[in-house]
Image 1 (cartoon, rainbow, N blue to C red):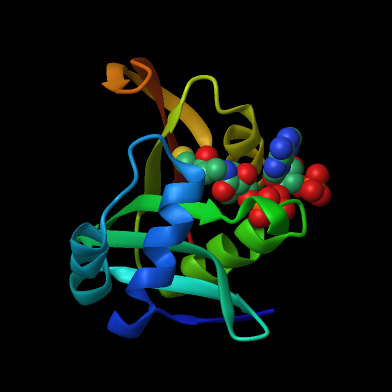
Image 2: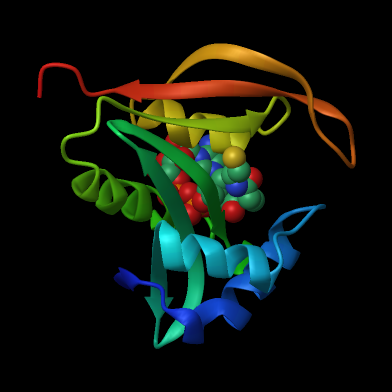
Length: 143
Ligand SMILES: CC(C)(COP(=O)(O)OP(=O)(O)OC[C@H]1O[C@@H](n2cnc3c(N)ncnc32)[C@H](O)[C@@H]1OP(=O)(O)O)[C@@H](O)C(=O)NCCC(=O)NCCS
Protein backbone atom coordinates (compact mmCIF):
# COMPACT_ATOMS: atom_id res chain seq x y z
CA UNK A 1 0.00 0.00 0.00
CA UNK A 2 1.16 3.52 -0.74
CA UNK A 3 -0.30 6.74 0.62
CA UNK A 4 -0.19 10.03 -1.22
CA UNK A 5 -2.20 13.24 -1.56
CA UNK A 6 -5.19 13.02 -3.87
CA UNK A 7 -5.34 15.22 -6.97
CA UNK A 8 -8.22 16.19 -9.26
CA UNK A 9 -7.45 13.07 -11.34
CA UNK A 10 -8.43 10.88 -8.36
CA UNK A 11 -11.89 12.42 -7.91
CA UNK A 12 -13.91 9.81 -9.91
CA UNK A 13 -12.34 6.95 -7.92
CA UNK A 14 -12.92 8.78 -4.63
CA UNK A 15 -16.58 9.35 -5.57
CA UNK A 16 -16.93 5.61 -6.24
CA UNK A 17 -15.59 4.88 -2.75
CA UNK A 18 -18.14 7.32 -1.31
CA UNK A 19 -20.97 5.49 -3.12
CA UNK A 20 -19.85 2.13 -1.80
CA UNK A 21 -19.53 3.40 1.79
CA UNK A 22 -22.28 5.93 2.57
CA UNK A 23 -26.07 6.28 2.19
CA UNK A 24 -25.56 9.99 1.41
CA UNK A 25 -22.31 9.96 -0.58
CA UNK A 26 -20.29 13.06 -1.33
CA UNK A 27 -20.27 13.96 -5.00
CA UNK A 28 -17.19 14.58 -7.14
CA UNK A 29 -17.92 18.31 -6.82
CA UNK A 30 -17.93 18.18 -3.02
CA UNK A 31 -14.76 16.10 -3.03
CA UNK A 32 -13.10 18.58 -5.40
CA UNK A 33 -13.44 21.23 -2.69
CA UNK A 34 -11.68 18.96 -0.21
CA UNK A 35 -8.85 18.23 -2.64
CA UNK A 36 -8.39 21.90 -3.51
CA UNK A 37 -8.80 23.49 -0.09
CA UNK A 38 -8.24 20.70 2.42
CA UNK A 39 -5.85 17.80 2.83
CA UNK A 40 -6.96 14.57 1.13
CA UNK A 41 -4.84 11.46 1.47
CA UNK A 42 -5.46 8.30 -0.56
CA UNK A 43 -4.34 4.72 -0.01
CA UNK A 44 -3.41 2.87 -3.20
CA UNK A 45 -3.04 -0.86 -3.88
CA UNK A 46 -1.41 -1.51 -7.27
CA UNK A 47 -2.32 2.04 -8.40
CA UNK A 48 -5.99 1.52 -7.39
CA UNK A 49 -7.48 3.97 -4.91
CA UNK A 50 -8.92 1.78 -2.13
CA UNK A 51 -9.43 4.29 0.68
CA UNK A 52 -9.09 7.93 1.52
CA UNK A 53 -9.46 10.50 4.28
CA UNK A 54 -9.74 14.26 4.29
CA UNK A 55 -9.21 17.06 6.74
CA UNK A 56 -9.62 20.78 6.89
CA UNK A 57 -7.96 23.04 9.41
CA UNK A 58 -9.02 26.39 10.81
CA UNK A 59 -6.28 28.09 12.82
CA UNK A 60 -5.09 25.29 15.15
CA UNK A 61 -8.25 23.15 14.85
CA UNK A 62 -8.41 20.12 12.56
CA UNK A 63 -11.71 18.75 11.23
CA UNK A 64 -11.76 15.28 9.66
CA UNK A 65 -14.58 15.18 7.12
CA UNK A 66 -14.24 11.77 5.49
CA UNK A 67 -12.66 8.40 6.19
CA UNK A 68 -13.65 5.53 3.91
CA UNK A 69 -12.20 2.26 2.70
CA UNK A 70 -13.65 0.03 -0.04
CA UNK A 71 -15.48 -2.94 1.57
CA UNK A 72 -13.15 -5.52 0.01
CA UNK A 73 -10.08 -3.84 1.53
CA UNK A 74 -11.23 -3.41 5.12
CA UNK A 75 -9.56 -4.79 8.28
CA UNK A 76 -6.11 -4.55 6.72
CA UNK A 77 -5.02 -1.44 8.59
CA UNK A 78 -5.70 0.95 5.71
CA UNK A 79 -7.83 3.47 7.65
CA UNK A 80 -5.38 3.36 10.56
CA UNK A 81 -2.47 4.04 8.18
CA UNK A 82 -4.35 6.93 6.52
CA UNK A 83 -5.22 8.59 9.83
CA UNK A 84 -1.71 8.08 11.18
CA UNK A 85 -0.32 9.80 8.09
CA UNK A 86 -2.89 12.58 8.41
CA UNK A 87 -1.75 13.19 11.98
CA UNK A 88 1.79 13.82 10.74
CA UNK A 89 0.40 16.63 8.60
CA UNK A 90 -1.54 17.89 11.59
CA UNK A 91 1.63 19.01 13.34
CA UNK A 92 0.85 22.21 15.23
CA UNK A 93 -2.87 21.52 15.59
CA UNK A 94 -4.39 21.57 19.08
CA UNK A 95 -6.82 18.79 18.20
CA UNK A 96 -8.40 16.70 15.47
CA UNK A 97 -12.14 16.19 15.65
CA UNK A 98 -14.84 14.34 13.71
CA UNK A 99 -18.46 13.18 13.74
CA UNK A 100 -19.48 9.54 13.56
CA UNK A 101 -22.86 7.80 13.49
CA UNK A 102 -23.89 6.53 16.90
CA UNK A 103 -24.41 3.03 15.41
CA UNK A 104 -21.05 2.96 13.54
CA UNK A 105 -19.18 0.78 15.99
CA UNK A 106 -16.46 -0.12 13.45
CA UNK A 107 -15.45 3.50 12.93
CA UNK A 108 -15.74 4.30 16.64
CA UNK A 109 -13.43 1.38 17.46
CA UNK A 110 -10.95 2.70 14.91
CA UNK A 111 -11.00 6.19 16.42
CA UNK A 112 -10.76 4.95 20.02
CA UNK A 113 -7.77 2.79 19.05
CA UNK A 114 -6.08 5.95 17.76
CA UNK A 115 -6.77 7.99 20.89
CA UNK A 116 -9.97 9.85 19.99
CA UNK A 117 -12.37 10.45 22.89
CA UNK A 118 -16.15 10.91 22.75
CA UNK A 119 -16.72 14.54 23.70
CA UNK A 120 -20.29 15.29 22.61
CA UNK A 121 -23.32 14.47 20.55
CA UNK A 122 -25.14 16.20 17.70
CA UNK A 123 -28.80 15.11 17.82
CA UNK A 124 -30.30 13.96 14.48
CA UNK A 125 -27.17 15.06 12.62
CA UNK A 126 -27.41 12.39 9.91
CA UNK A 127 -30.06 11.52 7.32
CA UNK A 128 -30.96 8.18 5.70
CA UNK A 129 -31.46 7.05 8.39
CA UNK A 130 -31.82 9.95 10.79
CA UNK A 131 -29.35 9.37 13.60
CA UNK A 132 -27.33 11.23 16.22
CA UNK A 133 -23.64 11.89 15.64
CA UNK A 134 -21.04 11.30 18.30
CA UNK A 135 -18.35 13.95 18.34
CA UNK A 136 -14.90 12.42 18.86
CA UNK A 137 -11.72 14.41 19.41
CA UNK A 138 -8.02 13.72 19.78
CA UNK A 139 -6.15 16.41 21.67
CA UNK A 140 -2.49 17.19 21.03
CA UNK A 141 -1.86 19.57 23.91
CA UNK A 142 1.68 19.27 25.13
CA UNK A 143 3.27 17.99 21.97
C1 LIG B 1 -14.48 2.56 9.41
C2 LIG B 1 -13.55 2.14 8.27
C3 LIG B 1 -13.01 3.42 7.62
C4 LIG B 1 -12.39 1.33 8.83
O1 LIG B 1 -11.48 1.08 7.78
P1 LIG B 1 -10.46 -0.19 7.83
O2 LIG B 1 -9.38 0.10 6.83
O3 LIG B 1 -11.20 -1.44 7.72
O4 LIG B 1 -9.88 -0.05 9.33
P2 LIG B 1 -8.50 -0.67 9.85
O5 LIG B 1 -8.27 -2.00 9.20
O6 LIG B 1 -7.43 0.35 9.75
O7 LIG B 1 -8.88 -0.91 11.39
C5 LIG B 1 -8.13 -0.36 12.44
C6 LIG B 1 -8.81 -0.72 13.76
O8 LIG B 1 -10.14 -0.15 13.80
C7 LIG B 1 -11.02 -1.07 14.47
N1 LIG B 1 -11.99 -1.60 13.51
C8 LIG B 1 -12.04 -1.38 12.17
N2 LIG B 1 -13.10 -2.00 11.61
C9 LIG B 1 -13.74 -2.64 12.63
C10 LIG B 1 -14.90 -3.46 12.71
N3 LIG B 1 -15.62 -3.75 11.60
N4 LIG B 1 -15.28 -3.92 13.90
C11 LIG B 1 -14.58 -3.64 15.02
N5 LIG B 1 -13.44 -2.90 15.02
C12 LIG B 1 -13.04 -2.38 13.84
C13 LIG B 1 -10.14 -2.18 14.99
O9 LIG B 1 -9.64 -1.78 16.26
C14 LIG B 1 -9.03 -2.19 13.96
O10 LIG B 1 -7.85 -2.79 14.41
P3 LIG B 1 -7.66 -4.39 14.25
O11 LIG B 1 -8.05 -4.75 12.83
O12 LIG B 1 -6.19 -4.57 14.54
O13 LIG B 1 -8.58 -5.00 15.25
C15 LIG B 1 -14.30 1.25 7.23
O14 LIG B 1 -15.00 0.24 7.90
C16 LIG B 1 -15.27 2.02 6.35
O15 LIG B 1 -14.90 2.58 5.32
N6 LIG B 1 -16.55 2.06 6.76
C17 LIG B 1 -17.59 2.74 5.99
C18 LIG B 1 -17.37 4.23 5.99
C19 LIG B 1 -17.35 4.79 7.40
O16 LIG B 1 -18.12 4.40 8.26
N7 LIG B 1 -16.45 5.77 7.62
C20 LIG B 1 -16.33 6.45 8.88
C21 LIG B 1 -17.28 7.59 8.91
S1 LIG B 1 -17.18 8.52 10.44
